[in-house]
Amino acid sequence: MNLTLPAGLAGNLRTALTPSRIMPTITLIVLILIVGGIQPQFFSAYSLQSLASAAGPLILLSCGEFAAILLGGTDLSIGAITALGTVLTAMWLGHTSSWLVIIAVLVIMAGMGAVNGAVNVVAQIPSFITTLGTMGLWTGVALVISGAQSIEVIDPAGLSWLANYSGGVPNGFILALIAAIILGLAMRYLPGGHLGMYAVGWAESAAVMSGLRVAWIKITAFTLAGLFSGLAALVLVGQTSSGDPTSAASFLLPAIASVIVGGNAITGGAGSVYRAVIGACIITVVENGISVVGISAFTEQIIYGVVLIFAAGLTMDRSRVGVVK
Image 1 (cartoon, rainbow, N blue to C red):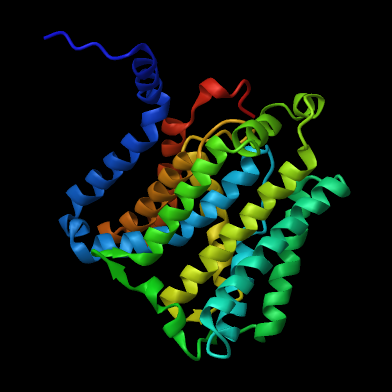
Image 2 (image 1 turned 90 degrees about the vertical axis):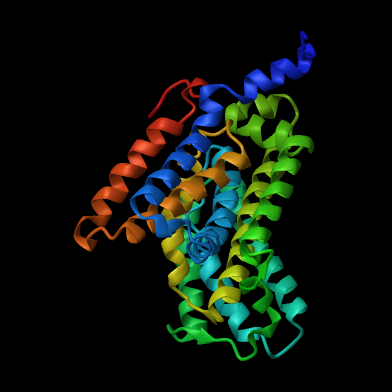
């Protein structure tokens, strides 16, 4: 029996299965098998659940960072926004409706992202400098209102569902995947995504001449980064029942690394949310795998750095980048 695929479907399949497209996924699978081969306990239900719980906030932050990087920019404030979000959430939970707290935190965090975009567009300050400044600003606000200390949630019931499981899968991880899927579909099918952010990142001057509202596209991208930082803050509070003005800052570099390790172009204009999610999973497996294997703390950072560079070299899609700087 001779089975022939339609030309369009065959073309899409060939594109999807090109080495540069599937290498991030292959890298993730290989890393999981290596760690599991060295320490079989890695495949236990408890270990996999812990891995998924750790991946949830990083996936959300990686998706937000991807929106900024897709423009050819960078958002260095996502960790600070997340930290401030955890503080506000911890302070407000138990004093009013949990859903009101959730909505308020998401709106405020998205607004902070919009401020980043507006400063970048109106003042024409590079996003790196803009978000470096707001990173200090939001960190200072979080430290001031929290008294530079962790805040325990009075009534954690409002977000406890994020620490629970559905079918054995952490709800925080499920929320992260759902949010990533929605963002991916929006970027693929909405004009402001596929025909907007990608165009601005690939050639901003051409996007301007073609009539695209570049300023609003930029503000939208940074607003998304703020929104996803707010979601990450809610997941972290749900998992820890506390708000910390500094802990979320440790997610910044892993989030940026996740976008790149997933194969997205740091120069903008190319990549996908899927790649950012896979990159976040790779980083999580590397970080947790090193601990599970039992490597000495003195050599942990060395191995982490080597593996990170090696993974980025394997997964980067150089076909979409003219010059690697």
